[in-house]
Image (tube, rainbow, N blue to C red; front, side, top):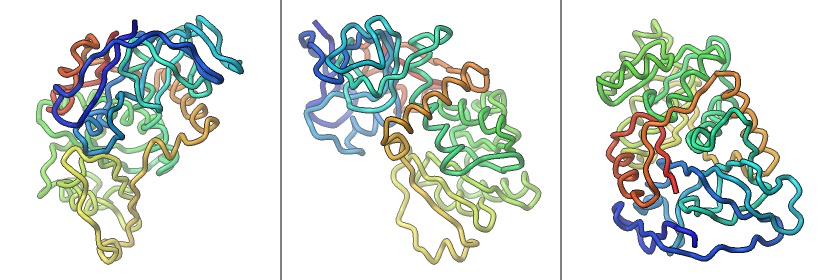
Amino acid sequence: MVMRVHLEHSGDPQVLQLQSDPVQAPGPGEVWLEQAAIGVNPLDVNQRKGDVPLSLPSGLGLEGAGTVAAIGPGVSNVQVGDRVAYATGPLGAYASARLFPAERLVKLPDTLTCEAAAAVLFKGITAQYLLKSTYPVGPGTRVLIYGAAGALGQLMVPWAKHLGAFVIGVVSKTHSVARATAAGCDAVLVFDAQTLAAQVLEVTQGHKVDVVYDSVGRVSLQASLDSLRPRGLLVSFGATTGAPEPLAMSTLNAKGSLFVTRPSLAAHTATTDEYQQRAQDVLAAVTAGIIQPHIWRRYPLTDVASAHDDLQQGRSEGALILLP
């Protein structure tokens, strides 16, 4: 039997229920994947809470790693016994085993464990498209990264430094400053919506930053806009404090012809080719030591509610993974 997390309705972590399902035979283009590790991401929490609507009832989770146990007709890119990972839908990663489209699987190098893969692939692809596509960071780029001490920030900061950027990290708590500094930030600021822009102006000697990566949302919007140089880019890609308020177009003009975007991982991995290219870039960055997985805590799948609670309450200091 397969153990799977099932969601009948949105709500607090206790709505995550375990159920047993039978093993299934893969159909055309599918594999049966026995999972060794499952990634937990903020998007999972937002979907469980109902902030990002799901068609219920539903499974949950978009990231996992394990071993191919069976392949369906027409599958040629993987074989039984291959160690693989994935970082996109369909939903249902919170399970001990599952069906999955073969073309969306990423083969793992021998040097990367399944636990490390489940901790780095989803967040790594996010960091990759933000730094290389949303805004092409390069030598001399001045960047502001919120959540610099968190799981995603610990990937974005060293990768941005590798690309040649001057990195200002933003953290929510004083005790997170040391972790953000260790990740490679040139400067670290503790978030205060009233003073952040002035601090950025001081740190950059009056230049402000070229791009802001804002995963906070509602409470940080104005501070982020005020931290940008003329024609700078605000990348709003998260909403830990709620969705940002609607923004008047005239505001962008008044603050220096600013640009704003709201990107998603789905839009940057829509085709198999693009998805695989970004995944391979992440694996290459891990192999080269540019970025590294940082697992904060492991939870048995039966304790999925605790993982969600820790992530939602901001207790985590790195990636969270579930173990079937």
